[in-house]
Image (cartoon, rainbow, N blue to C red):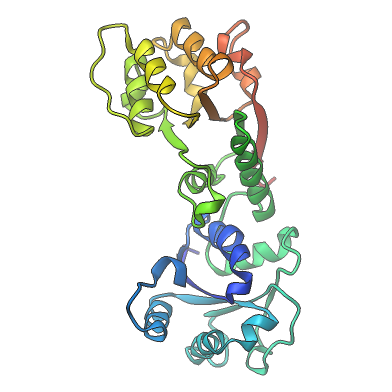
Amino acid sequence: MPPKSVFVSYSHRQGDWVWDRLVPALAAGGAKVLFDRGEFAAGRPLVGQMDQTQDAADLSVLVLSEDYLKSPHCRHEMDRAIARNPTLEKGLVIPVLRRACKLPRKLAAAFWVDLTDDKDPAPWDLLMKGCGCDLGTDVPGWLKARDEVRRYLGRKQSVNLVVLGKKVAWRALIEQLARPIEPAKGVPGLAVVKLDDPATKTRAGLVAAIVRALGGSCPAPARGDELAELKRFLEARRVSRLALTEFDLVPRRSQYDANLSAALRYLVMDLRRLVLLIQSRGPLAQLLPDGHLLSELVVQTVELRARP
């Protein structure tokens, strides 16, 4: 089943949960998620925008609670969702029980999803399947890995995100840390450099990509002087946070020499102006050969494991 466009109807009393857990999981799983915070514009009628946004979606997810059922706006969205398919047999309405409440009679026939305990993978699986979404792993595990990475980076600790298995939505995890739905829940200033980008194949290309990703300009340095330029750039800033993805390529890059490794180690460990998020398919200690300078990096390890 392909991912769908999903309208999320909720009370703002449950807003933090919706913005930081529900919407990120659906979006990372491939759905186009439509909701007020992402779609509504100032200066236009609220109800009209609600209706227009809801009509653009394939289905509606209703985040139910006592607060929701007491809200005229939420009841309006619920009634419109049910009106599209009053018998509910088409799966166009997915009730999600977030806080214990009495289900409305109109939803009595619906198979609802109980997320009052959102640490249980099973109800998440039901929701994700109904929306045509797949993270390649269970939602609680994906959210836990994201939260751990976010916490370590917030403490200025470098992290090795080890992705075990194929088709795991790790790219969306990093993307949401860099550009979160809820700004307060992201990692400020996190830049992303993809090592599978051909532009990063050389040492000079990698340094240029790092500087650009961090918002700087990168005039061509004197030949062989790019590492000194990188040091000067980072010294002029506060702590920079940088995600390096596909780090498994590093041992195979002949132009990533000992000088580059020494410089990165210095910038992270001694100068303390660089905090790294290293994504790889295996632990850093196993990825690098014995004696490699980057093996001396002190990193926290977070695993993101595919479904068995």
